[in-house]
Image (cartoon, helix red, strand yellow):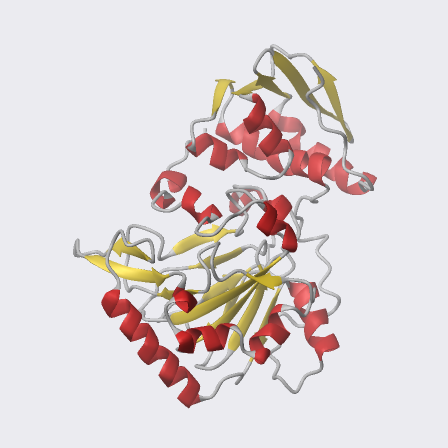
Length: 378
C-alpha cells in the first residue's frame, strides 16, 4: 500500500533545498502506519521518499486515519500527540517538529517560514489606516503583513453600548455552559476570559457582526468568505484577565490552525472590534508580520533568527484584521488587564462541508494549554 502522498504541485526548488538543509541534522524519519512504512530522508538539497523503514531513523507510529489527516493538513502532529494517536518508537518530539514544516511543504505546498524570505513589499508593518483608505490599499497591506490596523471604525457610543451588552452576557455566564471560557487566576479563583456564540444571544452584537464596515474589512482578500455565527464558536468576545492565569486567556504564540484544519480553515480572516483599547498593561495582540501562509516550526523561537515581532496597540473603536494562520500571541497583561475584543471571523465555504452547528476546532485544545507547554522537547 502506498503511503506517501503525491508531492504538492509547483514546489519551489530553492525553498525545498533550504528546508532539506535545515532538517538534515535531525536524520531520517519513518512513519509506521498500521502494517506499512514510509521514510523521508534529507540528502544535500533534496528530500527523498521511499516505501519501507529505516532502522536508524526517528520512527513515528500512528494509524491510517491519523496519517491521512496529518498528510492532508487536517490535523497537526501536536493534535495527534495530545490525542494519543501518535507515539514514538524511536526519537521524539524534537525530530518530528523539525520535519513538520518540510512535510507540510511536500504534502500541502505550505512553505516553511523564513523571515529572510518573507516579502513585505516595502510596506511599513506599523502603518495604520482609516475607512477613508481605498479597498485596494487596505487589501495590499493585509495581504503583505497578514494583519491590518484600522483606526476609528466605531464611535464611543457604539462601543459603550457593546460593552454594556458584554456586561449582561458576562453576568449570565457560568462555567461549563458551553457559551464561555474560564481560567484560574493567581489567587485560585475562576475568572471569565471569553464569551462565545455571542451573536446568537444578543441582537446588538449580531448587529456588529453583520455591520457593513466589518464585512468590508473581513472580505478584503476574498469576497466569498462567509460568517459562521453557529459554529467555530461564532463571534467571540475576548476578556483579558490580569496576572498569570491557568487556561486559555494568555495565549502563547500560535497559528489558529495550529491544532488542525488548515486545509479547510485557511485563509480565514478575523476582524477584531476593539471594545476597549489595548496595550501591554491591558493585554494586546502580538504579531509576526508576513508569517501567514507559512508552516512555522513549533520551536521557531529557538530555530529562527531575526524574526520581526510587533505589538499592536489600539484605541476603543479601532479594528484589527488578521489572517488566521498568521503567527500571533495574546500575552499576559503587564498591568490591570481588562482588554475586550470582539472577534468576527470569515471562513472559506469548505468549512461547512466539515464543521457542523455547535462544532469547533477549538474543542480539540480547550483546557490543554498547559499540556501543550509541557510537551517533551528532548
